[in-house]
Image (cartoon, rainbow, N blue to C red):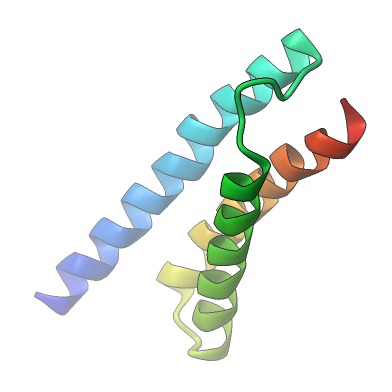
Length: 85
């Protein structure tokens, strides 16, 4: 059962990072604006992705580390957009 939960976590996290945030990045890029996004929400999301990625890294749990690292990269792009646009 634990392994099923780990795989479910990997899949849902990868989908969120790959599909959800990539669409947000596309919208920011085409509009050249972060209008409608909460800076604090994105900052807290960055903190969350970073925490989970570090937890996965230090616990040597690759199913937790890699998708959270992907999420960290994508949310970092969104966070950087606040300073660019």
